[in-house]
Image 1: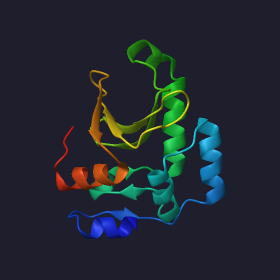
Image 2: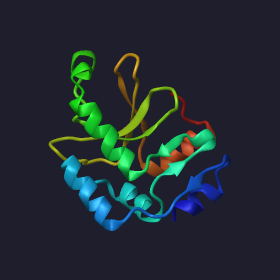
Image 3: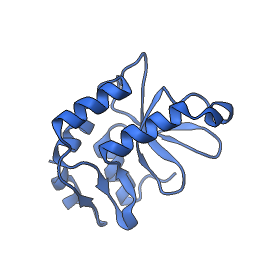
Image 4: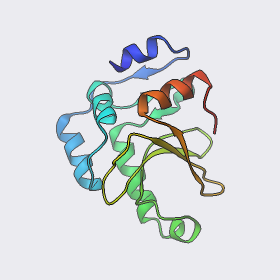
Length: 144
């Protein structure tokens, strides 16, 4: 499904082998939540998607886990930013800003994608789903 989404969008993207089901289950356990269906479907097809110049359109599973745990545990970030335990980062804009799902009450209840601005710590809605985020981001309709 995901490869067909990109056939209609300009811009180079690269896919990898699917994420192992056991690795996905372990990642969700380590982060203490279930991933949204669209993200699970994408990871079953490709362990992340890279755009032009290696931009992390959707990070590999290892980076999703590593970056989220690092952001939540960094004591300096607790001084600088609002808590990160309400976000599941899964991609970056290449400028320090990152894309995430919102976590409410320990779970992701909506498919909406938000952008976190690293300069002012704002969190803004950018797309109603992962598929639309990718379409808008790659087509230039969305900017951060």
